[in-house]
Length: 103
Image 1 (cartoon, rainbow, N blue to C red):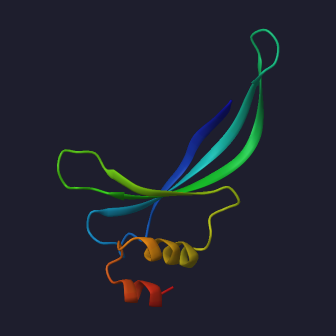
Image 2 (image 1 turned 90 degrees about the horizontal axis):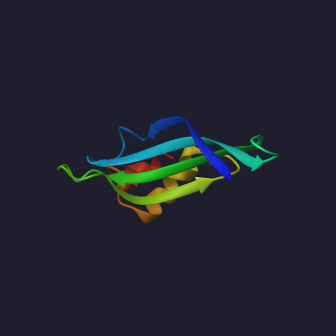
C-alpha cells in the first residue's frame, strides 16, 4: 500500500487568475508500506509527487469545483511551462494574451 502524505501546499499565479479560480500546488511524500511479519510493517520511501489542481469557487455554500489535476512524478515543470499548459486548456488568467506574453 502506498501512503501519500501532504507535505506542502501553495497557491500559484495568485494575482494573475480571474476571480473565483485557484491554481493550487500540493507536494506529497509517498511511502510504500508492506506487511513484514506479525504486527510489524516495513516502510520504504517512494519519493515525492507534485500535484497541480485548478479549482473554481462558485461563491455560494457549495464546495469548490475541481476543473483539472496535473500530476508530476519527476518534479513540477517550470512555472512558464505550467502556465502555458493551463492557458492552452482553460481561460482562467486575467488576460490570456498578457499571460502568454509574460511567460
